[in-house]
Amino acid sequence: MRLNKYLSSHGVCSRREADRLIGDGRVAVNGQEAVIGQTVEDTDVVTVDGVAVTETVREIFLAVYKPRGVVVTTDRTWGDPVLEDIVTCTERVFAVGRLDKESEGLILMTNNGEASNRIQKARERHEKEYIVTVDQPVTEPFLKKMSDGVRLEELGRTTRKCKVSKIDEYRFNIILTEGMNRQIRRMCSAFGYNVTALKRIRIMNISLGNLKEGEYRELTDEETAQLKALAGLKE
Image (cartoon, one colour):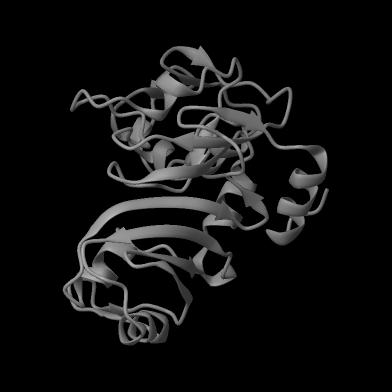
């Protein structure tokens, strides 16, 4: 098994974060510094920051309300508050996907690496719902162009068609089935709109609900079962 998948499946972090840890020299296999792309066997001893990786005791899924200004990473290089400052769960969990620094709202965290990978795969077309505030009045032509798919020249891609509806003069609701980098902000910018506030309120079957900024909760057994079923995972 590739080392990044091994770390993910043991609830250490996501595969992307695992590669960063390996690249930073924080992972060792049988006492030797690991390299990106390395494979391991069940008999190998893997350590992160000198601590041995063991089987996860309990599967955890959290719904977290990320406040604006908090970054979804373990990298403290720039001194920004990170998600780990909010989530004081005793077990190690990691974020499922991203939510940029200027945005707020729902983010999932888990120690199930396979579930994290399945939820993030764009080809699965899992829904993510947002409330967006912009600096100009929301018009029907704008909503139509947003829903039809937007060419993002800087990414060399066109967004998928999506569901968009007006809330009030300066706000609209949007449901995406993909997650390009800063996608909603880029889509709005293509039509001369600037996003002044962006809040994610739902990921698949999990809603932000009554959570307040900085709060989090464990998913219920029913929510977890439905989430895993939508992600194509067997119990």
